[in-house]
Image 1 (tube, rainbow, N blue to C red):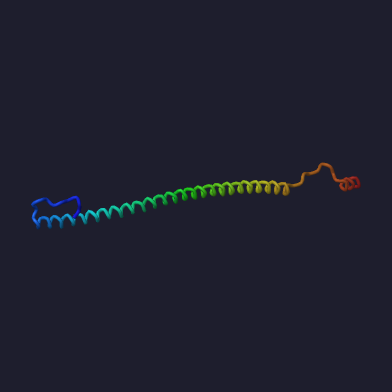
Image 2: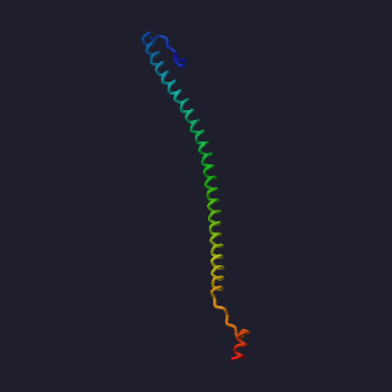
Amino acid sequence: MPDYVEHRDGATEIGRLSAEAVVREYEAAAKDIEALGVELVENVKQCEAMSREALVVIEELKETAERYRKEARRVFLQIENYSLVMAEVRKTCAEMRDKIAAPAPLETKPKRPELQAAQEG
């Protein structure tokens, strides 16, 4: 019998036995409730551990996302720089093509063989 109850003087034997049976059932239920509390505390500890681990993973994910953003910026700038270089190359090639394709300037002085032919003729 639990120590938080005691029989009163004058209680009949049937009353005492009935009271003990009832208090034992209540005590068994109370112990089950306490055991459930212990399990719950254990579950809470597991949840806390999982939460801590999740926070670590979240930080790692943030760092990974930041590395991806930095790499994206690097690639973006590299592509744009290549684009600028290619535009400059195309411009230079176009200028060279125009210089090569342009007609030669006309000379105002006749060349020597032409000069001789003019004098002879």
